[in-house]
Amino acid sequence: MKETRFDERDADEIVRQPRHKDRTPLIDRALIATGVALAGLATFFPWYAFLNQDKFAMPALWQGKPHDLSQKIGHDEATASPLDTGADEETKALFDQLVTASTPDRATPAPKSDGQDQPFPGSIRFKLVHVAGGRALIEDANGLYIVKVGSPLPDNSRLATLEERDGGWVLVTSKGDVLKAP
Image 1: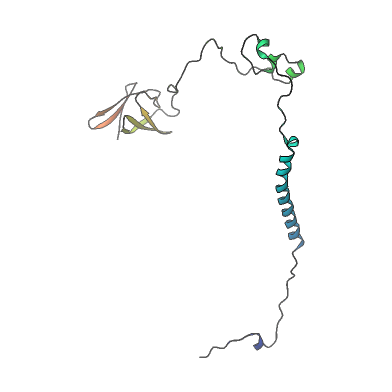
Image 2: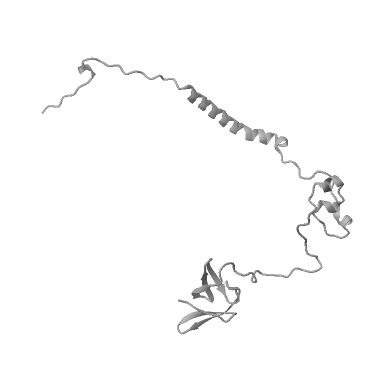
């Protein structure tokens, strides 16, 4: 069977397709112009701000002469309270007079802590998961912890010893509790 090919010369009549306008709609032109203008401003403004830093600088938080607080308070420590600086009544009226905190006296030093006394948050129940290299992996509802002898445990006790008993590892707490590894 012979294949027949047709082209536009074989048609009975030529039908012209309507031509779409090649013009861009007005709204599209407006959006393009707005985008180009914003891009130009985004390019220009950082340079303008860089070259005119005095117009865009952060204002000074405090302007005026410095105060020597140590002579007004009567000791060599300084305070951050503007009420202790001998400020005028207008300045004092701007600040809340309610005392919300106090600082400890320097004569009594704060107790030193290496963070070992802080209890674990959460539940008191925990279990021994694994022991290796003198450390134990314990698990409670909040997650997994690696502890060594002397470390605080989730029940506010300390790890007293890690012992091998009956072919398995046990954890002994300072409260006398014994936990076996599975």
